[in-house]
Amino acid sequence: MLHQEAGIPDGKDLGKRGNASLLNSKDSPEKVYRAYTQKELAVLYRVAWKTMGRWLKSHEKAIGRKSGHFYSPKQVEVIFRVLGVPTGL
Image (cartoon, rainbow, N blue to C red; front, top):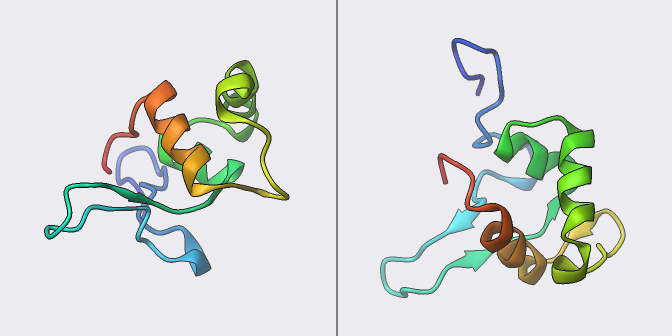
C-alpha cells in the first residue's frame, strides 16, 4: 500500500514475506521479531537503501553482520532498540 501524499510504501505490504513485521501477541507481553533485508528495513524507516546501509554500518558492533541477505530476528530487535521502532509498527 502506498502512502497517499508522498507515494511512499508504508511498510505494511512487503511482498511475499507477508505483512507481519512485528508481532505483539495479546497473550504474551514479549515482542516477536522476524528477519528483514536491508531494503525492507529502509522501507520501514522511509529512507533510501543507501542511507539505511550507512545507519546500520555505524552500529555494526552492536548489531553484528547480517547472515546472507537477512538480519536475524535478534539483530532486528537490536536495530529497533538502537534506531528506534519505525513509526507505524
